[in-house]
Length: 261
Length: 256
Image 1 (cartoon, rainbow over the protein chains, first blue to last red):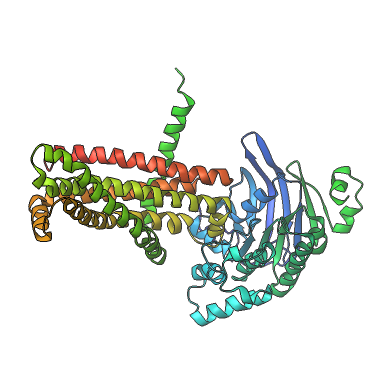
Image 2 (image 1 turned 120 degrees about the vertical axis):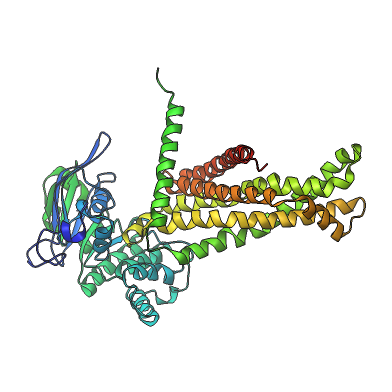
């Protein structure tokens, strides 16, 4: 295990000196669970300011991919480089530093149900921004809640909110540390089409406002169409095809076409 | 000879529990302690368990007195009723019954809470937000359970003696001062100390087993229910095994 600094390959830890250098580089990654090979020589790159959607069927390994990127799982082989950090080699402290710069929106929202919305939002700040005064913490909480359109929910419990509102709060919690990269795990799953569209538009809105780079895991084509700058299609553990929405929409490959029909 | 699957699973789980316990002590020693969460857990585990523990303690003293009276009367030693009951409560019944009630209330709630947090990815969310979930969730709960159970047992014993006093006076009359004099004349430091020390181990066992079952709960709501249920069963068995060991140790040390 290496610290964040040791795991960084360049002289300037965590900074992207070269604008052309991808902020995330997943290269020839393999991951298997028992006999099931979920990722098989899988590679993708994410560039600064870009939104990349990873499209794939349920159980294809999409969620595993972003858990490898954030260090919740370790690959069996290959390179996972995020903001210059060699993720599998990071120790706990190194992962903490990385995770303060990379946000993660969970499919199930993962809001702490014993805490109010305010406490949910303060929680990551207490870890990473402990030098902030109570006034600054409050200001950040209200700012991010206003950005997701729910400032009035600050003292409510997650159980008192609808699915769409919970998703917005989860996004607010992801945004509160002002991450450079956000990873979205199926952000519209379980939502009705109208709320799903609102969440997709909100993702685009915060993307512009916070100038983040994003990877979105999804099989909701409406969400993909609204959010994607580029799409990577994950089939049989490989990056089977990639391109813009329009390019892939015109694809004649039956496996790719199946997603767009 | 092939080892049966159930036996292999039992050994596997025992090994995982041992590793989990080792991790607890490692994280307990590492700085950056979660004092705020620990205090919160002491409040939840200790203060909020008080009404239940008090009620069961009172009933325990009362019922034990009423059950023992006919036997003691038949031997003509009814006057020894306060002494007999207080010794039984302080040395054995109080710690064990309170620990079992504690396992039912706290062990199951730990199993269910952590299990549901695992299923809904809240533990992963804690991890990605830069918080060590083991330290935040497990260390605080186990430490609070270890510290709170002895306090609850002392309170339960005290309330139980009050129940005994009422039980003694249901048929007959013993003044409060005579009752207290009889009880405290017969009770010695060596009765209370080992009984109190073992409750730290009972509390630790309930906490570590409850957290272990919940923390590694399998995905799905069925897994949460199973985690809560097995937390209570295993913790209750652990209380009896620890009690058996405590009796043997005090016997060997000659403080029985």
